[in-house]
Image (cartoon, rainbow, N blue to C red; front, top):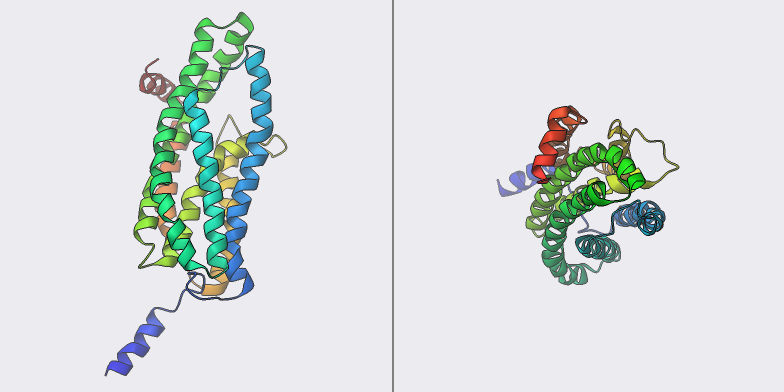
Length: 274
């Protein structure tokens, strides 16, 4: 009886070849490293050229100075991305003991990143708003046209503020009992953070500021190699993607519904207390 039960369990619940608990193929071990490394490449491609452009704009009085909260956010975000890369490399090399020890850092870094973001978003908004009120005439004219765009970008930031901590919470809670869910959700939680980076890559086709469709497509493309290989190896849709979709799709419907609406522009100003 016991043997028959064990056999049925194996048929009903096939092993997750990408969980990180077995050596697997080369691609099994390194597909998540590739995804984490692509995150860093996207961040650099988007934010490095834009930062130089913003610095020139600040000197010319056409942009608000970088608030201190933004510097903290940038440092924490960079730290998180490099931690993510290191963690995926350790699992690929079979050093799960080091991976678990280093994972303690994420228990501090992730909440700190969430808090820093909550401070950075209104600080950036208020910085631009202050330039509109007190800046030079050319700066005021330029930024008055930009403020409605900033209202809409706030929708994407609010979506991130819900998706990232929720998925990270589920991922961190499942790290021992379900390593496959843990590693997938970590990467899926991180992907939406790059909407701002994609919007800053000038050579990419974009629908902004009319619609966030293009950044959303690029977000999904960042995890597409992982997703396709997952389907090929396990021949089933892992529930991590269903959890991600259950959050991303409804929140995106709300974002698209409110995008550039008069009600949202008024609500954003009220939310930002300006």
